[in-house]
Image (cartoon, rainbow over all chains, first blue to last red; front, side, top):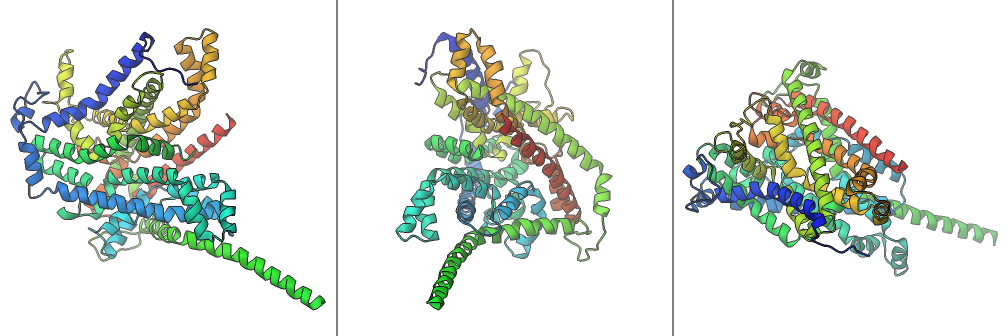
Length: 281
Length: 307
């Protein structure tokens, strides 16, 4: 039986703590929103203004119209790259995980063990050779460079294998009796029954890629091919000194899309992150 | 008769063999796309990184002479490497301790049987969705010496303006604070899942025996949560050891080199100084350190089976 939820006095401390923690979490974001409606003079003032006295859209307008800032393009690029990356990870990892979970072939355990060991190798060691490969393939400034080098995600294989193993085999046996081949078992039995796991992994890698900074920063060079996090870094280095509210507007505007998605799909996102974070346990 | 029986056996063998080999072929077909990408972007890249680390490989120079272990010898005597390593360790320790405490406290609070559980959970996870760019830009301004809100708040309790990001001794703790704010949501979710795995009967039994909330936390929650705490701290160490975005956005490594992290330094070497060979050596050393940390993780986490 579920214990009843209450607002009894015995929970006062819990509420006080949660309220303080929520303030700690929300205050920085609200301040940034508030300051993006201020003028430069108002931001550079002591004591600091919490609420703009004369709210203005000046900095938001500037950040959206400046020649060397393209928030719209950067958002588009981030979305395309993160979606492409998520699709690539799922398309590569799911079949491989199926082979490891369900098929008998010489070296199954050995190969899987080897992959697990490579999780220990941090991606930084591959940065320089992969960057040079991108350059030689002339993939710099293209979506290929943003999508493919990280697509062979060993963690994804590991996670999906965990889930595929838990799918009862009798369903597959029934499918085989109905004449399903290996692909049929994978596509019509395993995948539909693992939708939760695939969604969880998808959300996890999408968010990771959407917010990634290092790799997009080194493989994109032109204004049009940057992603949002890279664009923000550039916005900061070129405008922070002279026009602070603009930088905050950029930070706020760039965060709005992901926060909207989060508010709509909060339950799925939180479940997905938890499931993936626990490594499928 | 005999002859036909043999033929039948052979056919059966061939059939069974072909079934088996069909499965093998299918397995390889399912693995092929992943393995192709894995070989090109992981295996080849790692081998190439190790090879490059023995060359004087500058992106602008056509000559790339083999120099043996000179890159590694240079690294041993490179004071910036050691400063970056030290900064990274201090940052990681502070951030992991802070994140774990905040995340655990938050998880315990939101799993109490109170109204608004779901609301607080959603709210507290929010910063984790922001990109390091947005987080950095927001916090640089909060931490500003002259006009920052944090110093303004401190002025009420009589503390003079603190130069959070400009003081060599404070810059790493300041980046840690920013990172705790940004990153405690993920371990919080893991702790929530761990807390929900603790049977309610244990608490009920302890309450009947007269245990206070504090007793319950110390003698039931903490011990049963130990595997989760280990998991969170060790994965936290690995992820925060790779810190790059915060110094890159907020301090560009300064003041001086007080907030250089290892990955930030790697970036400087390879993409500012274009020394790819030396960069590869630095990357290999970072990889070795992290491989050691990860092995410790595996050892520590595999022990949890004993519980």
